Image (spheres, rainbow, N blue to C red):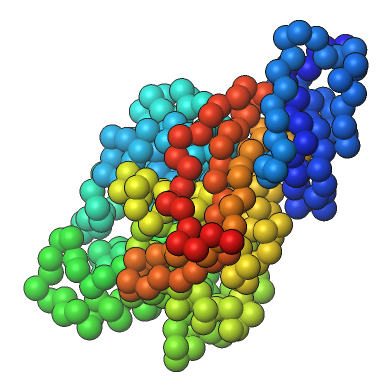
Length: 409
């Protein structure tokens, strides 16, 4: 019988997947949760002088947070070092949201993913080069569908194919590009994930393209997406207010959205710096539609502005359509299931992986930004990750979230 390396003592243990919400102790042996009990007897034979007791009184102890959409390829336009999106933000598992394409993935994997303290996975971008510029130039770009599908199948850490439905993609690739991408993902056996929200600006200008023409192309691709996406495919930035938004005042996409959701398409809030519009979210709530998943879309510009970390992104939804437990569920078990992680990720139970996040749940009147349309809105809670364990190894967080509340209570 191995001794406990750590005991997390007296925290509020919340595991939505199992319905657990209680003050408990957790004993960690190596990379495994060895014991969960109301109170671990300090005379337990598994405790010796090397056992470290972590006082979690008043803290929230959850399965390790899973960020389904962030960017940790620092060589590309948006990317952060993997430590910043991962353990320093309290995330034990993270998924890069399409920073690398087929031509750049292996370098990204060897130099960053494999060296990351957090467990790391990635969507690869449909564009072969990846996201090395603010927007991808899709003019005269061709994609070998079979080779891309085969590449995804051969790399187990690739969890799916991603596109950004930008004006360039819509204008130069069109609905056929949407169909090709969905077909690639289907052939690979992995989900297709798509970023919604763009402008009418073309990276590769075309004198034949008026703003209204480009906007029509984006709307046509959006409708094609909603008609074509399959069970398990993911819409990132589901509550954007930009061109391509699916929740609009006139309800023009409502029927197509409901049909997609009925097929099992997943909505990820993917908050980001400029891709979450509180008004679009309110429209969706009025229709009874809520996110299935909540990720940060954390990039280098968001570390000190609007996003901060996954904890802040999650806080925007607490008592704003979702309970604390429902929010945690959407950033632990649900994203793990969305990318078919069946190794215990997103759960907290005996004999499971010791992937754990310890957070402080502050209460007050917190003023959040959406930065989509310059709106602010308030929320009653701020989740600040303070520590996490990855396979039983502890890490102190550095990025604790936005500033203190204006009116504590």
